[in-house]
Image (cartoon, rainbow, N blue to C red):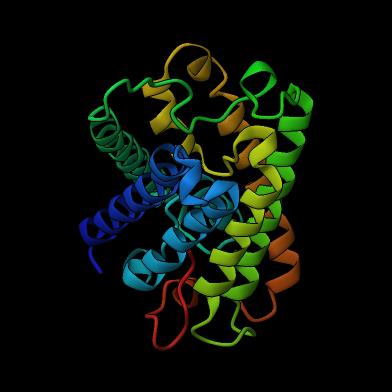
Length: 248
């Protein structure tokens, strides 16, 4: 695959994750009669990753998340020279997705931006959790998200099932942490909505870059120890889907 194909796949995957996941919160969850609730939002985020991992994961590896890209690079499963291009298109995809979502949502009479599915702590936390609670949960959950990714794409794992494990892991993560931070574990997903919510959401954005990347990097180190026997080769991590489910 060419780099342009890989970057396009990452752009589309991150767009879908942001538009689908945040869209379920901004559009569907805003109507209690639909019954989606935060459990439905959690499932929506998991489904976006699962579906796009199968759709384009064999092209780019299916990261859709700067923290995932950094964590895989630390684990030796992704070339460090490609980190910045991947992160750039992931952020771009999330921002454009948030823009498209804003355009749709603003078509409703009486629309107010409010939090716009952004992440936050303190007064901006859905449950009013403080800074340290937000920091710890984002580090811990991103750590385990990366561990699931590394393990499910290991050569020792059953082929073809990684997107399912990864999608359900992201669903579980949202079920745990929506009340705390509205769930980030993805700096790109956090950046897009925050730019439209503005104000304090932008000023708190630093945490939702620092914590997920720190958790992912720690998981990358752990992954080197856990999976290094059979997973030292980069081509395995980026192989075609029929042979081995790609990294998501």
